[in-house]
Image 1 (spheres, helix red, strand yellow):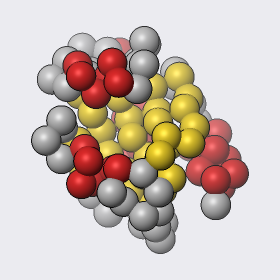
Image 2 (cartoon, helix red, strand yellow; image 1 turned 180 degrees about the vertical axis):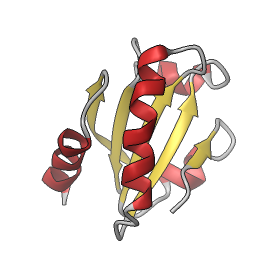
Image 3 (cartoon, one colour; image 1 turned 45 degrees about the horizontal axis):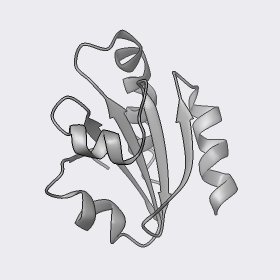
Length: 106
């Protein structure tokens, strides 16, 4: 499954109106740790897990979204379940750590 590029324009339809779990990576192009974390997000998306959507928000281009979800440092992962923010994780994490967060919400 491809990673969805999330913006102010499509966030509601892709995340808030979604039934199931959406993993949202808040990142920026200049962020070194974000680049280190990107392969983890790619792996999770490639696993094609049922009822799981993976998306990325560029915080420089979507500052309103970053502010709304209180993103203070990046990378920050927000895990939304049925349109509501259910968990967050700040910093570079392993695939196992992110999957544990997701599985705790199922």
